[in-house]
Image (tube, rainbow, N blue to C red):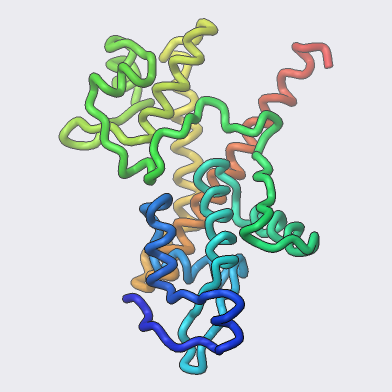
Length: 251
């Protein structure tokens, strides 16, 4: 539930208007439609934003707080940065003396090229909320129908009933299309599915206790933990492949 609005100190009102958590949610959902009040409370608990409190204990956010939240949400959505890295960047921002919302820090990408290979931004919404038909998936990813059939046979790509594909399916199909340009076929990718299943089993043990709780904050923490684990796994995998190729490249 949105917290009711409360009066703000006169000095604060003159220097910068303050907003309730519900008003902030309305501002952010224009660009980040999956944002929830539980998410905002979670980011506060993680020390990424510190809204003021009224005498009654209600949160009151400034525009600087909103700019800070936008930075955090953008870093997560566009760069897949874990909260630890985002927190470090915000600390550098704070120590530089810059005013939040006036000079935003540049996002530091994970990986040497600033992107996760094969992962294109598909929609502003969560990948699970994207819905693509079979023909649209083929058209947007660049794979052909026979390749899609083979990917499904191998379990590399799975549709949601009744035959919809989400944003991650598009990412997978696009990556397969890119690898195919170098001569890799779907049958070569079976090991990726096996390795991913192992990681899912391992990570599920870490997040399941939180995800099973009825507390929305605990479930939000489970989602953030899963996001960070995925980002760290991607970094580890990329580094191991680079190290393994050094001898081939003569470096």
